[in-house]
Image (tube, rainbow, N blue to C red; front, side, top):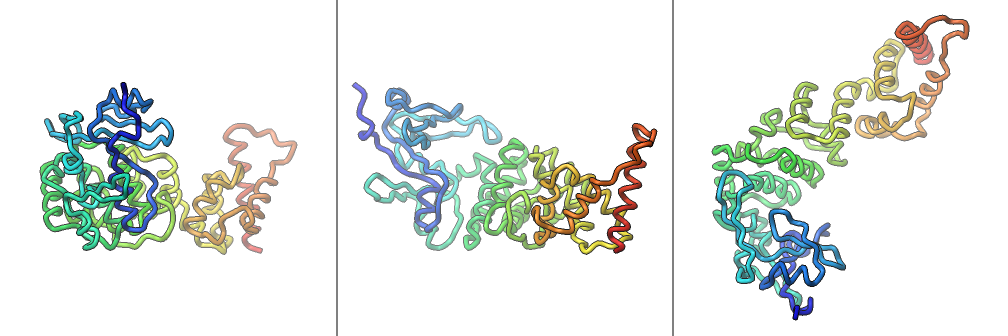
Length: 358
């Protein structure tokens, strides 16, 4: 007979416990189940979702529950682990495989905290410290620590953890990661409280190569408030560097487009009020930003470079959009193809020049 669900030994772990202790909201709640088997969870209608690890979704809450496990590395990179998720694995053994002490605190159903690796002290001291030498078994942890430094700006990386991170980078471990995993950490860091610290930590440990070579000189400026997409667009990159970085990390197109639009058209749009001698450059920017079709793309850019002009209510842009749309070739014209497009372009530029010269 399968034991009732309430007889499972479940512990809240990881970021949910850490954030609760720091008085922060946490988007996810992860659980560890000790002393149970996969068959028991499946019999209770848990749904397995982990391909490589024994992770399940709760039938009602849909929160993630993982069997307590140990991991032993068998090869280079973040894959190739020998997993033991037998009912004999203890909570302390499971917590030992985690990256940082502040993420290796558990809470039982009575609210009691289990802290075998002094994570509470490191929370109090504001220290990002690895749990054990097993930290080096997953090179993604270099980027995770940098991301935690950006999310928790009053925490500093322990000196001994910095040494391990430098050794991992020097040994070429970072190149074994997938582009998707690196980008996920990068995007989270850009949306953090102080994204600057992501770059500082990586620069300290030599973590820019091979994934972020275009940024290895560091990012000196402080980021304005905004989304991770907007902050990515503020990075000090050339178009060529942006294209290489985007291809290497497989960065989503909407991130790349906003960054490219800022580099190509940000200066002319931010130079408002415009003058007649800018008509050609402004016309090119407006056409490329598809302003005659809808305002979505240009508004994304304006939110970044001229937030006072973003939105459908801006009078100057609305006047220009309506004016350019109204420009047409005479009905009796006989042009077609490229000749038609060039003639229409010249008429629109003439109209824009006159509008700006008023």
